[in-house]
Length: 83
Image 1: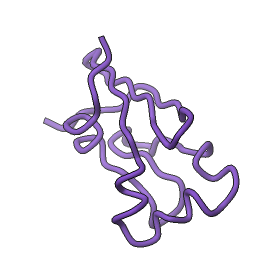
Image 2: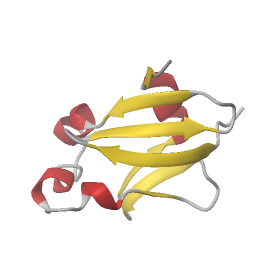
Image 3: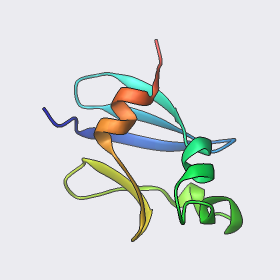
Image 4: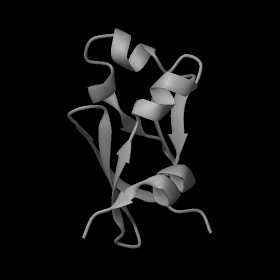
């Protein structure tokens, strides 16, 4: 089952607060992705880019630019649950 994103909020220190349609809420740390994935370093290098995170039309992905995105299943599985 594909998890759909209800809302997203950029937080300090390159973290995202993500809420899903099923009510689950997580904090996802993007720093490892920035260090390991090609092109993601722009999120640190371009001032203000990280705060421009958006949800795609299908609500199954968040993105910043054409080649910088994160699928909802990764956010859901690897995000730290918020109680």
